[in-house]
Image (cartoon, rainbow, N blue to C red; front, side, top):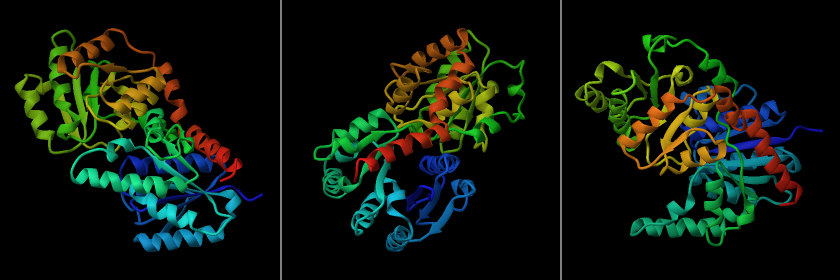
Length: 376
């Protein structure tokens, strides 16, 4: 029997969280014996494009119409009974849904993969309200023709099911592909920094784009308070417009000599493994891949209770700590608690196992086969 075939459709393929999930999911599916094709609207060279797993068939069709024609040609080549199409990014859904569901029967299964809270996009006022109305109309009249929606958290699944007029029974939660063998290997590489030595004081780690919304200024202030009781170091990996401002804040608070902002790191996992904890002070995170990555390296996380993504991860893994209210004082207290009572690294790693690329791929395939066996 021919292998099952999955086509990943994405008009944009650069270097974001969606692209990383696409690569990891394809890697896991390949390891589960599935043939994978990337049908992209751009080459994907650089960043995530350089990390496409070996064995993936690549087809690039720049532009919406060429992408649709490329999908039509690919569907004609595959046995529809052993073929599923996964559409990524909400802006891609309409064209892909129209192409697949408009094809003569039999056709392949079609699944929309989402990491977005749709009710947030449907609400608002003024121009945003008009855009929300148009989006809601597309969801009800077009997107609902897909065979299923695969979401990256139970909360996002519940959000999709709450959209009026959208078939709730088509929405499924699957563990997203966040970690894998590559993360484990990279995390074991040495960190060339004196603070990474085994006898060095504990490192508090932050990872992310250095923008105001990430609220790393709360972490800097919290570390100043923690240092009244504990000798710790602060490392924040990432680049962005707030980098120099954060460095100035640390100097102004008298902790400039124990704070380092080295910029972007191609291997944050090695830092995660040697850090005492990872802190994500953002008040808005749709998911928070970095928290799962941290658990996988055996390092606990602290995040804000108001952020939906971290709250979902905390509920699913029963690991990490959520902070409320979102103040530097409450954050400092949480950091101090973690320093005084270290978590068990093996328990942390076990909690991240469902998000391994192989296990996640099986989760996706179970959902896909379950729907297709029921008929679409």
